[in-house]
Each structure stands twice: as C-alpha cells, then as structure tokens.
Length: 367
Image (cartoon, rainbow, N blue to C red; front, side):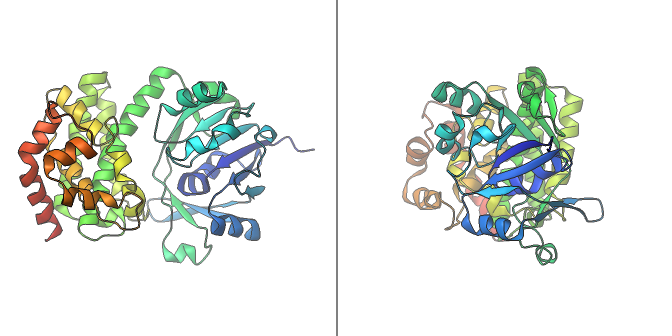
C-alpha cells in the first residue's frame, strides 16, 4: 500500500504543469490534474507523462512527471486528496466554488490575488483555503527544440514557493511562513514583479515581439521597466516598511528574470486580460495610486499604463480595450472604462500627460 500523498492540481498550464511538479518529489507524492483544455488533457492521458524544463545558467535541466490522472472539470472528487492547489487564474477560480466547498484538505491558491481565500471562505463556509506565492516565472510554452522532445514541454525557472503556514500539512518544497513574511513576499511579488513584468510585456508587444526577453533587449524598454521597478521599490519601502536591502535584491533578480533568454516567456501570456491588470487595486492603476500616495509621480509606470491602454491583440478576451480608447476621449475613457474619479490625483496626472505618454509609446513602436 502506498504512503504517498495525493495532490490535486487545478490547471495544467504554466504553473500547474511547469512549476508545481518541481515542488513534489515523485517518491512521496502523486499528482493529478483537472484541465479544461481538451487538447492538453488528451495528450496527458495518452502519453501518461510530460516533461518540464528548469532554466540554468547554460540551458535546462529536465524533470519527467507521470501524472496519476487528468480529469475534465467535474470528474474529480476533492475528498480523495491530501492537498489541492489551484493555478487557473483569478477570474476562473469562482467557477470552482461549489467543488472546493467540499474539500476537507488544505486548498492552496497559486493565483495573483491574495483576497481569494477570504472571499471563498465567505462564499462557501469552508475555512480550508490558503494563499500561496510561487516566486517564479513559468512560461506556458517552450522553444521548439524542447517541444520536439515532448509536445507538452514547458519551461520554468528555479524559484521559491511561499505559503500560508496553515497549509503546511501539504509539505513539499514550499516555505510555509507566518502572516508578516507572507505579506512581505506578496508586496514584493505584486508590485516589484507583477507591475514591471506586465509593463515589459505591453512595451514588447508595441514593437511586435513574441517573447518577453526579446523586448527587454530594446534599451528604451529596459530603461522604462527598470524605472518602474525603482518606483515600486521606493514606494513599498516607504509605505510598508519593507527592508531596502531585500527590495533592492528583489528588483535586480526580477530584471534578470525578465531578460532570461532561456525562458521563452510569451508576451501574450504576461499581457493577457489588460482590464484585470488595470483594476483599481491591481498592478498598474493600483501601483500608480500607491506611488502617488507616497508623494511620487511614477513616470515609468504611467508609460506602462498607456501601453496597456493601447494593447492591440485580437485574440485576447479584453481585445476591445483598443477599440474603446480609440472611440472615447481621454476623460471619458478614464472615468467610464477605468473607473477613475475626475477628482483623483491619478486621473489628473494621466490627463495632464496623456498626449506626451502616447507620443513616447508611439516613438518606441516606430523605432
């Protein structure tokens, strides 16, 4: 009889298929997946294995994962598992509400929204929900040479995973930390990773690049991303008492990650759903508001916001953002679409700099 722990992973995408297998030694764990995408699900069931590749200084190291099962949504029984991890995206998590309400084991959310555990607790009455932070960049694809080895191949970095200590029964290669440490790591991830990361993606899209590292080669783009990183570093140090040495180290680490030529991080993945990223409390508008509250005008983040406004990808579910910005005058767009109040400082700063910001983005696009 096996003494292995059984882990159920919702989402066999970037984090689910690329990073999570590195956290759980196959000698001690079995992994099963729930995946909406039929093509991925069928490949996992047919091949009964997949490869994930971790970047090194000179290339990649390989991990072969042999999933126990891959379910279509609704086929799984959450009562069969010792731990559940979600990696489906904040918009999709509420579709799992009824299923997760039945869970008796810890449910760990690897989503970019720290409020999700509390929201799901309120909706379900289940208190087994916890927040986790995979401090890593994982692509949702791989270079062709690796995909030739395995069509399910994915590339990830070697990162560190932090979790609310309430989920520690899951164990694995995860740092289970107290609320203070989790908050510090989340502030760094939200503002020093998420903010400049998506800015790099929107700027890279402006010059027609496919992967993040290709855009970061452009010196003007690198300079703006670096500037946005510095703006966020100063802000979280001032407002949240984050240690300057930690914040500086974190920023340098992130810039190296964004430029990692082995990662093949698709711009379409990082830039997707711009309206979510432009939420009032999220990584662009929220970040700029935070800087202003600390007495700083975030010139580089404002450029990133304008690049997000101008993101023109017809395959993205938020593709109509470009249609709206072209159809409305700046004040109406900011007020009706972005939900900024005309009395807010950010509204006034954006209106004052509107044409200049568009011109700078246009100059980058036309280089």
